[in-house]
Amino acid sequence: VQLQASGGGLVQAGGSLRLSCAASGRTASIYSAGWFRQAPGKAREIVAAIVWSSGSPYYYDAVKGRFTISRDAAENMVYLQMNSLKPEDTAIYYCAADPGSSLWEYWGQGTQVTVSS
Image (cartoon, rainbow, N blue to C red):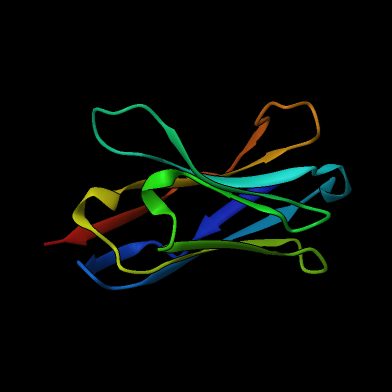
């Protein structure tokens, strides 16, 4: 599975961005997809995940109510709608896929999100 993330950029606090992740290859093997982020000097952390078949989402507490993960299974796309952005959301955002092994085996290249105060 190959993943290509896009949609990052510079936005003011309170603004919105929508990240996209295009999956290709053996997409039928995807059990769940997720978005992670890594801020400078910090460990990578999960932001949101979604079960591919059902669309059931999971959210990290810090983004609940502000971020929405969705997927278009027919187009093999995963999205992260980010609203009410805060400076602490600044990070490189990565999309990832789990083929049912409970491991995030596939990773996209990352897209930079910068939120200015």
